[in-house]
Image (cartoon, rainbow, N blue to C red):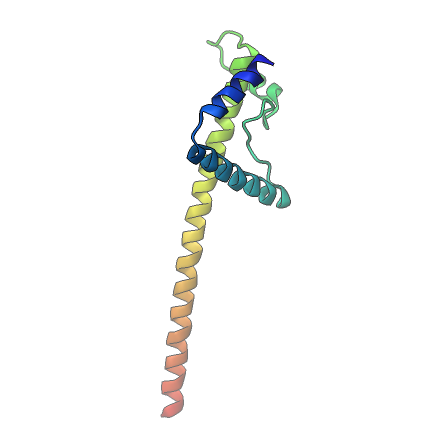
Length: 125
């Protein structure tokens, strides 16, 4: 209850503009999550549950000989950091592939126009 009460007090201190900005960002995030789930893509969240199974992180940490046993909080942080790393590089890969596809489409359109022009020139002779 104290946490909820302090959160409520903090929210009430926010300006109307800050509240509107928060609600707008929340709506954008919810739309993104719905689209991703519709495509079957797991979405990293700020939730307490990690998308990467904790046993996987624990097994990876056990492979490093110089590291002592980590507590669950450290495993969770490593898991979330890994999710963020994967998400960042996935987004970059999507941006790059989109640019490549756009360039290829432009090149194909130019080639088709050149072919059409060449065919028209041949037909006129």
